[in-house]
Image (cartoon, rainbow, N blue to C red; front, side):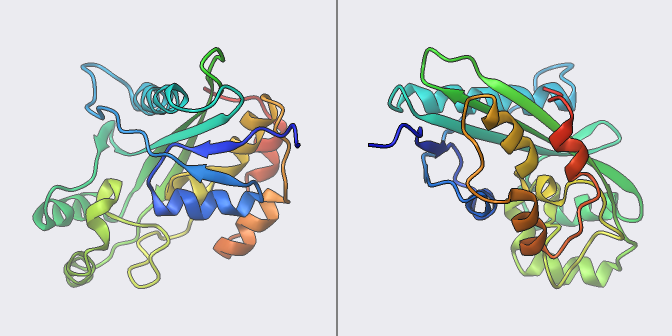
Length: 223
């Protein structure tokens, strides 16, 4: 029997499942629902880290003692305002108009924990996202597709038709919801070593030459 702990992803996000599959680790999915309201005076960094920890602790409550649970939370932040998922097509249009033509930030907090007796290990990724000056007609067509309605900030950076970002920089995977290099360095702290070349697989899959992966792998966590 292998001593390698089983990995559980505490998320129902198809994008996070897609990204984590690039790691080569075997994992199962066990969504963890938590209250995602922003607390009074809460900063974006504190918000995503709190939710990631809440999710991971919810996950370990129902997992075997030796399993490792991974959770993440992503927020689109524009001028310190945290943008959630739009509640309607009209709100999606308003969000996209507000983000148009300037740079905002995407904050992704992650947390990993091994067993109920373990302490969560956290990390934070902040990525600048420069949006292009897309036309109102493009917004209307994109919102009509339905794609923005389940995404924070009302956009998917990877969408092949809309392509909202002017020139991506930083961690592309984090904007999709799961910064894999941050996940790797956090899981190493719990003794889980990579089962694949994560930076290569991530860049090849996303067709993106990441300018920050080396720095991430050689620096300390921010969480």
